[in-house]
Image (tube, rainbow, N blue to C red; front, side):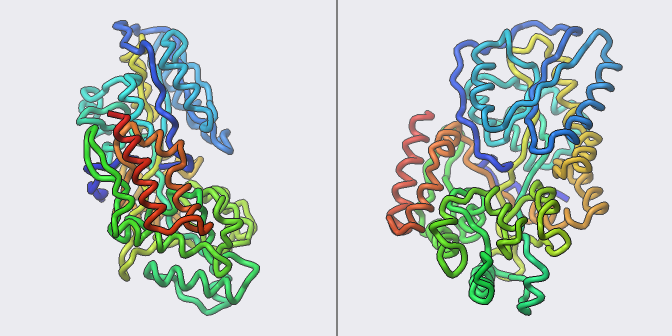
Length: 432
């Protein structure tokens, strides 16, 4: 199975969080050294429940050290929320920088612009398993035709819904975006103690499928030249659809305007929402909640019946810093961490979706929960603009501000979208 490659102007994720601000750097040039022994320093992201991830990584490190005599690997888990500051410091001080890092795939363009990541195109092309990485995953580590890492996992969102509520009210699973909105409002009317569909004014990646399903785009362009498209007629139609879900008839604006993606998943897991747009990475949290055994997952429907709304394909990558003095070892470890074996083990341990289609198929065969996310990946995926400006746009909360102005009544769709477009264009211009 291959993924959609309609992404010429776009690049991602997840993950749950937005992209970090791209750090400015003073001296991050390659060291020119390639030591074959010594200590490799690795920074990986700290997860909510990190122990299963640590166990998988420890196994990889043990094998790596056994096959690389005279080499030790030191792993540090850093908080996702403060990664911008940590990586900025690393780019500015190669002496204390790690050799290998995990990074969000929305960070790729910014990190490349700042010269922090090593170009590993030759090694990636020579890597047998690299040839099996799906096109979307490869694109997430590619800038201007060069590869700057290896895909680590991919994350997409789908529709979680309460099977008990649907059965009680005699509801059918929505097959179109219009049915999704009307079903959410019907649930709220009949069960006013529930949100029909939990939505969030600060949930950018939950809103994007509505924009894309209606034919809109975040921006158009390529390379270093982008222009905002968030104020186009098609994008405004999607914005209007999403913001129509904020109100007393579904998810009250006074509460839901400030909701993030995590807040909407928490609302569903706690039993206060009948539906939510959540990721494959949300599964563990929902399983630990009040709705365990009372929910199912389907792809988020598109505008037309029998279509799936394009999903934001989040996820993380593993990269080698340009400043490393252990390039060969670092690239080898990158490949081991991003290998099919490791990705399969991380799926079992953490629920992270593999970036290889064959490994995903194996995961889906083991756990039917995975299938809606695999279907979503196969149908279509979209990305944020492949510009270092995206970090500034995301950190400045341009899109959440747009949504929140609309649902609070401070601005209409056209006005708020126009303001957002102006801000995005200013960021694109300043990024060069």
